[in-house]
Amino acid sequence: MKIKKGQAMVEIAIILPIFLLLLCAVLDFGRILYASINLNMITQEAVRMGGLGKSDYEIMQYVNEQVKLPDKDTMIVNINPSDSSRDSGDYLTLKITYEVKYITPIIGNVINSPFQVVTQSTIRVE
Image (cartoon, rainbow, N blue to C red):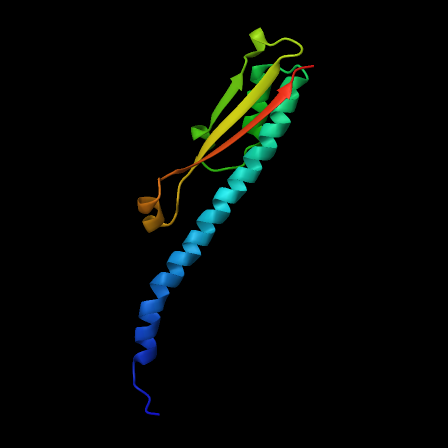
């Protein structure tokens, strides 16, 4: 079989962009999964604090201390009902919304960018 010079270079030039795109897509998926798991655990712990009688300020402070994500200033935390109208036996719902920006340029243009991670938890106030 005759070896053609430069054939390997052409094959790499064709495959490399596809490989890099897939690698970035896997990284984006991992970042979204990490944010989802992190926020889910924080939501459960924070709503438990509210169910035990902590104020909205204490819950917000706990959430801000525990979140270890970039751009956490864009995170939206909703507590319903507020601590002024919360009575024993009521249900307290905590919802955290966080936007994860894609690092893959093509995926960010094709799919809605940024991706919203929404976690919600409800507990009965004691």
